[in-house]
Length: 293
Image (cartoon, rainbow, N blue to C red; front, side, top):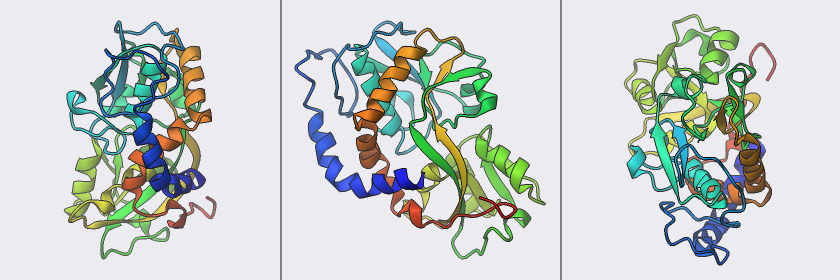
C-alpha cells in the first residue's frame, strides 16, 4: 500500500486535469444513452462482452457509506468515487449503458450466499477463506490496516492490546485483531464505518483497527477529533468479488487488468482517493505484532 498510496498522492494534481478532460473522450463511440454519473470513461465502448444480471446494466454490490470510494449515501445518489467510476469504466468497455448499484451489509457481500449480481466492489481484501465461497479478480489496490485514535490519547504498538478496540464486522481487520493482536479487553464490531468512528470520538472505544485507505479520510473531516497513528502490513490487496462460478469471471478479469495496465485506476485513485488522504501514507509509522511486521 505504501508505494501505491504515495504514487496516488504525488499524482493527484497532475492527473486530476487529465481525468476530468478525458470524460469528453469516448473514442468516437455513440454513448448518448449511457449514464455513468460524473465518471470519466475511456477505452473502447463494447470491446468486451458480458452476460449481465440486468440487461443493459452492470449490477454492482457494495456497502454504503464509503466516501471516496462511493460518493453518496444511497445507491441512487452515487455519482462518483474510485470504485463507482471503476465500475463505470467496466460497464463502458462492456457496452453496458449504466451501473446498477446495490447496497448490502459487508458480511452479506462476502458471504457467497447470493448470486444475483455481476460483481462486488467494497474494498474487499482477497483471502483464502473468502475464495472458498466466491471468485476474485486480480488485486487492484494493496491494503494495510490503520490504527485510528482520539486526539490527545497515547496509544501505540506497546499498549494497544490493553485498550478497547473497534473493528468493522466481517472484515480482515476484525480477524487480525482477534487472531494476532489478541487484546485483553473485548473487541467491539460495528456494522458500518461512520458508527465505528463516532463511537471512538464519543469515548465508547479507544482505538479503531481498519483499512488504512478508509481511515485516512476521517482525520480530514471538519471538527474531527481523531488521528491515524500507525498501520500494520498485511501483504494483501483488494479484489472485485464475483459469485462462485460466474460465467463472466474471465472477461471481467481481462477488463480489470486492462484498467490497471493502461493507468485508468491510478488516475481514478489520484482524483477520488488522493483528496481523502491528506497525508503521505508512507510516513505513517508501521506497528509490529510480536516483533514482526
